[in-house]
Image (cartoon, rainbow, N blue to C red; front, side):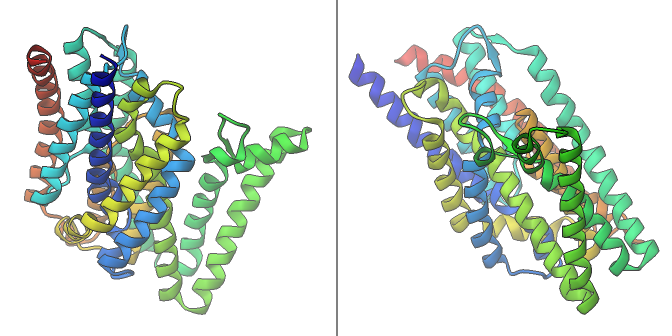
Amino acid sequence: MAGAGLAVLVVAAVASLFMAWAIGAGSSGSTPFAPAVGANAITVMRAGFIVGILGFAGAVFQGANVSEAVGSELLVGANLSPLAATTALIIAATLVAVGVFAGYPIATAFTVTGAVVGTGLAMGAGPAWAKYQQIATLWVLVPFVGGGIAYATARGLRSIDRDTETVPVLAAVVGVILANIQFVFLGPPGTSRSLARAAAVSVGQFELAVHAGVTLLTALVVAGVLYQDLKGDPERGQRHFLLALGGLVAFSAGGSQVGLAVGPLLPLVGGDVPLTYVLVGGGIGLLVGSWTGAPRMIKAISQDYSSLGPRRSIAALIPSFAIAQTAVFFGIPVSFNEIIVSAIVGSGYAASTGGGVSKRKMLFTVLAWVASLALALGVGYGGFLAVDAIL
């Protein structure tokens, strides 16, 4: 019995690594630098290499919230059994891998969530309606909020046409977010803290004022550095800012997407394996996936959805970074394909010609998102019943 349980756990771990690879080759590996590639700021192969490293770092330093949510908050009354977790991971990873090789960005969060919920319900667990409402709210808002902000930002940059003054303002907004995102290495064991919060706690007095001061200082420093860069060479400054934004989104992708791969494993390992070790394993899977499979999807997203210049690429990445960090903070599994594609389309529509947005491609993508959730839910439910009956 113990041997059979160990065998199932090993299979679940292998399925988790496969899932991490598929995510790295798909959403987390391809989407963060797709706008930068579309703007010719970086090559496809170099983007895949860098995003793998940053995704690994994000997985280790920010992956706990979403991992715990996927592992224990999608169902009530029972955690996934080893057999259920293995079934869910194999089904989700297979669907995502099919999307990678077919050239369509399957929404990873939809697929994993559907597979976990489907197998859990078949196993006898109850639905976590409150969590589903939270997840559904974010999923529905992402296209409108992300696409809307990207559209408005791109239109503003195009209308004002003074990048030396306007782009540093956007950099200041990024600085505000950067000062307030949480990192595991800034807090005590088991707790994450932001740079601004860590500084406020260390001072011990006037915490609110210190928090606000660190946030403002970070924003001014980021804006000032970019302003000097733009002043020396506007095109080079835009390219540097675009690459920095891609790096931040790649880091955020690792922090969010690793939870989709390793979350179902957490109920299996319990407290026997430290969470950090599990996140490192998932991060390695993302890294390998980014290096081996991401270039194909980077090309698909950067060229097939919209023809982006530096301004529209910057407009797409800023809301993507903000939404990604919001999802990480609240522990909500979110699709980076949905985030990035929505932002790319929004910024693309800011152009007078529509930015080369492919409506046909978008239609197929939306259908793939909806189908991936429904298919994973149904296959997860039926697949577990079939496997359970056989074993």
